[in-house]
Length: 137
Image 1 (cartoon, one colour):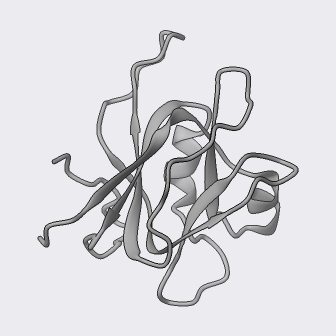
Image 2 (cartoon, one colour):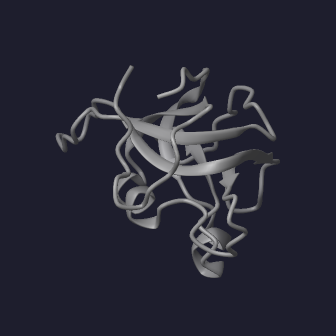
Image 3 (cartoon, helix red, strand yellow):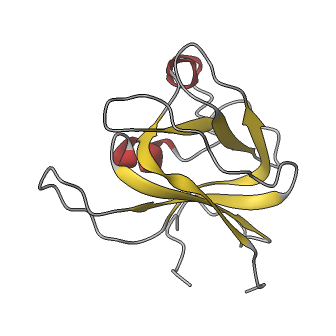
């Protein structure tokens, strides 16, 4: 596997803008605080081929998820400013040009409203929907 540069975008509760679900694109996510307010993301390497990952963090609600890094999607990284339904968003545009499911909906859905560390990994391994887990460093 190629060595990759990792960029920590922040920690917070994973959120999905409403338009992503309604359009079926599933292309961006953002982080929110415990009150649901958007959190500013750290700088992402826009335009770089990369993997977007989320690592569940210990939570205060008693629900525990394995602390493993999970692949949300792979492609060209992009960011968009805050939207009416959320904060500044980050996503990956897949190289195959598809219009929907830019991120893995099942993984994003499982981690929604969970406290996570969001990261971008440049020079990422190829995305394979059958294996969405990324081994920790």
